[in-house]
Amino acid sequence: MFLYTDDVVMGENLAIVRPVLVIGVGGAGSKIASNAYSAADSQFIAISNDINDKVEREDFILIDPKTWANPSSYKLRYYAQESSRKIRDALRGFDTLIMVANLAGRGGSAIAPVISKLAHEESSKKTIVSIVIMPFRFEKDRVFQAAISLKRIRDSSDATIVLDNDSFIESNPDLQLDQCYQMTNKALIQTIDIVCRGEYKELGTTFLCSSDSNGGAEVATADSVAMMYHNDYPESIKSTLLYVMGGKMVAVGLLNSIANNLKEIFTDLNTPGISILVSDGDKMNVNLLTSVEKTTRFDDYDPLAQIIPRENTLDWDDLDSSPDIELEIPDIE
Ligand SMILES: Nc1nc2c(ncn2[C@@H]2O[C@H](COP(=O)(O)OP(=O)(O)OP(=O)(O)O)[C@@H](O)[C@H]2O)c(=O)[nH]1
Ligand SMILES: [Mg+2]
Image (cartoon, rainbow, N blue to C red):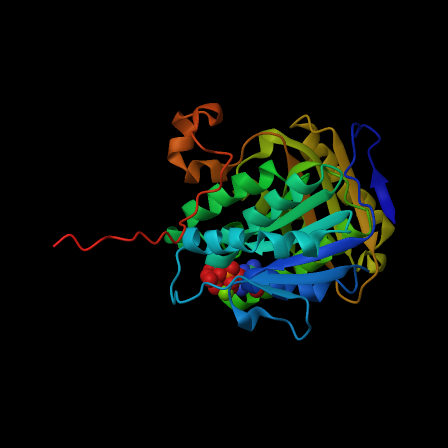
């Protein structure tokens, strides 16, 4: 149910057409997707380089790194490309694909761009929604790979929803790691659900902020807005959807004043669209989805991209990977 929606939002909407396949990539992606898909009335598959990510049932593609115990992201991507036929077969017959991956993981950052590219190449009629988790700032070795993967995924997806682990910790510094995962995973599962139900309509890139503050809907909304500001891209916001879970327990007058407050905050920024979506649920939490127009701070993670424009980047169309090439070196002695 929509409580409030601005009619100013115009333009093309994201098309969600059934049947829908929810794809979990890597460890965290598989876990989140497997928890979301049944409620979302869709099918599920997990794709990972780790057999332990298989979730009880048969729908699993193993990207086997053969004899490698510690394959690099590039090596894993090569093996993912080797499995292209299997992946294409699994995607066939679905009109909408919702892919969930943690780009902080080696598996996620290596495999997810291969899947979105294969899906995009197969048919321009397929709708591809990618939902990705970005690394904590302290995961320094993962930040670069994650940023490059995000860029590639955005190129081949109709909509990309980004949850930044870092902005969660930044706005909740006392949060323990498992509490952070619990919160973010809940927000992601709820987001997959609203995408599947066709209630999420934005094309392009969106940021997901969330809060389950005990202070009620108003404080939780304020927390989410603060988290959004941590991402430092308020000027480029196109539209905003506030999803209030368990919102039927919240007074209508309060929801109304939240809508007005949001409108006031974002009117200053010349933002055209604000919507509030309310749903049933035992516990209250809010998810704030803000669609952004311009590049994001993740582009700063790849400093060369600031200097060299996309059109001058050699071989951008081919994903970087590290193939196994066996050279026969003759014995010249
Ligand atoms: N938000 C969230 N982040 C998680 C969760 N589990 C792990 N992470 C983060 O994701 C990273 C690892 O992601 P995984 O999905 O396990 O990695 P992978 O894709 O399986 O790749 P490997 O690195 O090869 O295991 C860690 O650095 C954590 O930052 C989770 O449940 N929720
Ligand atoms: Mg893993």
